[in-house]
Image: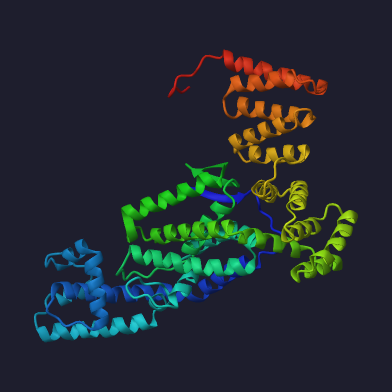
Amino acid sequence: MLIPIRHDNMSARRWPVVTLALIAINIIVFVATHDALTRQAPELGKARVHILILAATHPELTLSPEAQQLVSGFKEHNPEAWAKAQDPNHKIIDAWEAHIRVVDEPYQLQQEMDSLSDQYAKLSTDSLAEQYAFVPAHPRAITYLTANFLHGGWLHLIGNMWFLWLAGFVLEDAWGRGVYSVFYLVAGAAALQFHAWANAGSIVPTLGASGAVAALMGAFLVSFPKMKIEMMWIFLFRRYTFKAPAYTLLPLWLLMEVLYGTLFGQASGTAHWAHVGGFLFGAIAACGLRYSGLERKMNQAIEEQVSWQNDSEIVQASDMVDAGQLDEALPILKDYLARKPDSVDACSLLREVHWRKTDIPLYLAYTTRLCSLHLASRQPEAAWQDYEEFLQQGGNKLPAQTWLDLCRVPEEEGAFDRALSEYDKLAAAYPTERQSLLAGLGAARICLKRLNRPQDAMKYYEQVAKSPIPHLDLEANIQAGVGEARAALAAPAVPAGASS
């Protein structure tokens, strides 16, 4: 069994108020409804089964509209079970069926059907699951909302809430509370509708937050594809842990849901197609937010608000920017940044001002500075996003040290090809700077230890060794790397498929 424990960004700029509120509401609703759901389910299930058996063995009986809908839906979605119920020699399931088998009078049988139909109608009206869970055969508008806050058991609740916490609070931090709240509620409804399309006519109530949570997972994949997730694997009563990036784990989970949904449908007791629909909706919505530029604007707005409440100058400048008073805001922000050069808020606002003034050179300059500040404050995802915006607006090369620090982000996240590419660009852009030597060593390290390309590693080490840039302090590392590369080249090749 695989269980996610945490991921690399277990912090947020603000309290995740919406995520905590959603978890609290789910827990409160569960405590308030669990006993009733547990008590009502067997009674309603028994009435439902008795109606189906009586209708199957006596098709001449008249059914109420509710009972007819029940029977029609069951016949359509469970033809094999319906055929068994029609078999007069099928195994008797309880005392009621043993009694009803010896009744021959049509009047008595119709009376029993009418009594069961009345009982079923009353139980359905009183049942929380029937009224507030989602039933594909007859969906009610309110159930697109309420079904997402009902759960069948403690394990069901705990599992959904843990996934909601892991994926939700970082998305709330990235998108803001308003957009995140709307996304969550719409995603839950979309997942249920996808489930209804896949199980048209089903009379089985569906409940739980897993469709909305699956949408958060899809959005997490798009927003943080390289973020590493720490997993716990329990096997033979032993626990193992490992880390893997989101782009490897989450698509695998989606494929498993598609497989289970195709093979088992609802027979497994899990709404797999609701998970698939939610995941796809979340991924598509996140792509829309990103490529429309809304995600960047929301993220900037949050950054501008995080620490400004007690800083009158930043608040004043922000109000000016919002009012379009860009020239008035500029001297305030420049003076503030001169006094507090590490201020992400002031730098972000200055970048926004120059973007609105279409002053691309200064926009790029402040984007570069913001990237450096994000790296210094250990926000690699934000720094990488700054770099991508820098490139999109025509930026060519970052300052050497900032670029070198940024190169280490994909290397640490396991994106070795991207890291190697960035090291190469840095070395080519700054051939006379010491950072180019360090970039060459970084590229050699990746080729030798991560990509199993000792020949390329040797070329990088030789280039660094021949560089005219002083590197006496790096000589020991260079020679050690050359030795490892030679040893790797001299080692016999391992045939494909061989194992030790």
